[in-house]
Image (tube, rainbow, N blue to C red; front, side, top):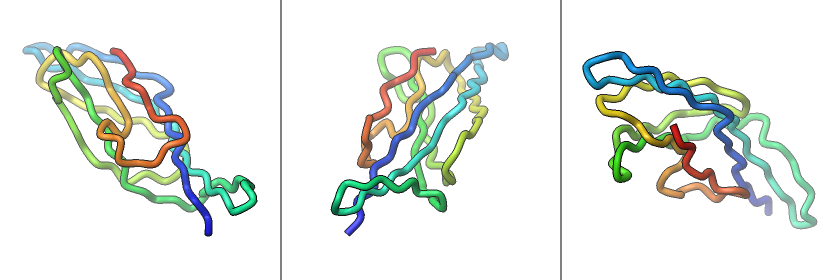
Length: 108
């Protein structure tokens, strides 16, 4: 039986003020899933198309944005608009996915 682990990373994240306390966040993500067989051999999941949450927090870890996206493997860019100053962005903020290296918050 194969076991799958995610290896998702935030490659970059930038914030642009839009005025009236609105901000645009541009996030570049690297989404990967790796299968391991019973001998420990790795096999990349080239045909994945999985639902993964992306969240944005503001002051005092207030949730400003949470959305579930369907991602194939690879590099993706998201543009997110929020109504308050963001402080961090994170992949799988609730830790639902079994990850080789859980994604830490990326400070903005």
